[in-house]
Length: 118
Length: 111
Image (cartoon, rainbow over all chains, first blue to last red; front, side, top):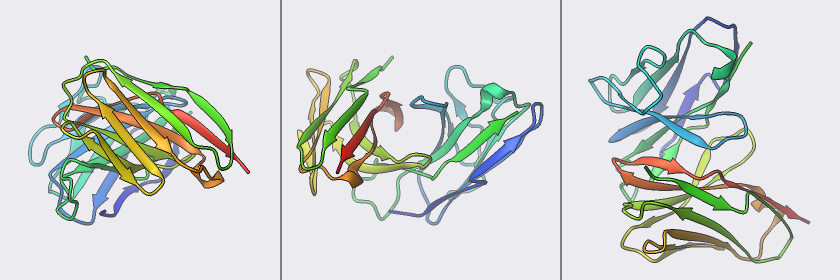
């Protein structure tokens, strides 16, 4: 499988500030996604990051709060805006469509970014 | 809307035991179902992917089965080891590769 990296791996932020999380893949992929994992919970899909166009958001998530970019086939960013303590979560990017993978719809995840908002 | 449930939520077994983790889903119109492992504070590791046309997949000591008609999948772990201790997540893919996750089973294998 490909190497998927996220930066930062963790951060502690103040209420009202914003944080941008980067996701980098070492090979081109078809699709990229962003998920949130709140403390003690499972994963919830935030949005699909579309290359060269606006992201597609799931119910309950909006662009003003979670702006997403995907300028090319290997990189995406998620910004958590105007943060509150309720945003404290692990944020994970995932990818589908790695050329080297036999099952093209197998999904792979980055290591996650652990965000704490004070 | 797809809903995925995993039972049990937590499981503790002695080393060497064979065990079964259960996953159920409400919408049987899935493209595939994927099992993941998550270690504390880490991301997800893909274990097995079962396409909708398949009945099971095997990788080493792991075997996953899929019964679409009944909305169920099981992950069988043979001869469990302490290194298998982790949270196991199943996820259903209904459309567009957007996954719906279950709540996970937290497994502890005691030496």
